[in-house]
Every structure is written in C-alpha cells, then in structure tokens.
Length: 231
Image (cartoon, rainbow, N blue to C red):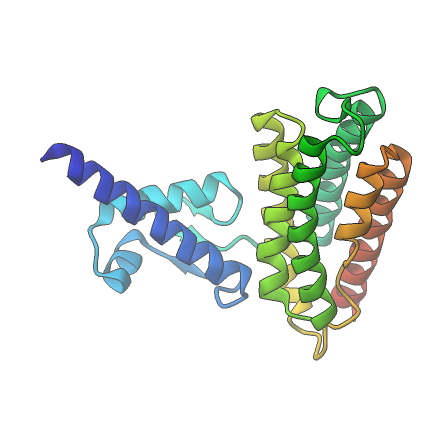
C-alpha cells in the first residue's frame, strides 16, 4: 500500500536525523567531518532517499551544512558565530519576557491558577532534570533536557514560529560549543544550572529578573568558550 511506504520512509527519515543529531551533539561527529548520502545509507542499511531527506533536514537546522558536490559536513562554528547566536537568542527571549511583563495571554491568569501552575510545573520538572545533569557534569543528558526545557517554555507563549526559531538557535549553539566543552576533564560546576530559577522568576511575573538570569548565563557561556578557544 502506498500509504505504508510513505510512513516507513518518513519514520526512517526522522530516525536517521535523530541519530545523526545525537552523534553531533555528543561530539562523536566532529566539526569538519564530511560524509556522503551513500556513506550514511550504507551505514544504516537503508535506501538513499530517506537519508538525503534527513541530511537536508539537519542542514536546515544548522546541525549540518551542505558541501556542494561533496555531500554534507559538520559545521565549524567560530566564537564570533556563537556570539551572534547568543545575540539572536537574546532578542527572542527578551521579547518573550517583555510581552510577559505587558500581560501575555499565557500569563494573564493569577499565578496560582491551576492551568498556569500545571504548565509551569511541567516546564520546571524538565528544568530540574537539566539542572541535575548540569551539576553532575553530564553534558549529553543536559543538552537533551535543556532543548526540551526551552521548547516547552516557548510553547507557553502560544507561537509555534517563535518556538521553532528559538529551538533551532539553541541546537546550533550546542553544536558550536560541545566540542570545546568536551576538552574539559570535569564539567561539574561549569555548565548553566539556572533552569528552575528562571521558571520561578517567570511564575512570579518578574520579567526583568528572568532577563537578567538569561543574560548572566549567556555571558558566562561566552566567556568560557572564549577561554577554551584561546587556551
């Protein structure tokens, strides 16, 4: 049946994309690493079509970049790239916190409203997991929970375009820094662990506090990356 074939291909496409994204974010596929559609298809024992689609998807997300006539490769981002990513992320999050202060529909209900409290509690639980991973220095676990934390937080603002854009920026940011962070013998105490602090500030409707928390995190991560690349 044609429908089954479409579903299978779509599932393969997503599975391959997820697997390769995990490889990049875990640092096992290093910056500059190039590969062809055929190489990946042979590795996974599948046809070229879902592989090509998966690689195109990852290129759109900034996890990979197309290398004309050669296939695809893991991008080599610079400190300047990371600084620009942070600036772009800040424009998005500052806007989110600004509309929060102005009375965004998602936060117009009283802080103790059951729906608002339940939504924030879900995000906070994700933040707790991210925080535990950060404190333990478990980078791969932190990345997964951090991405889910920000995805679920942005959902509260009811704009899927905002969420997709912010998610893409955060994925690119992790791709940029992960290789440098893996050079540290011990990551405990070196990774941002302010997720629950941010949620609590938002729950109290303290937009300026939320902005300051994110700004401090961005400054610390940029300073760490500059230190690692210079030394």
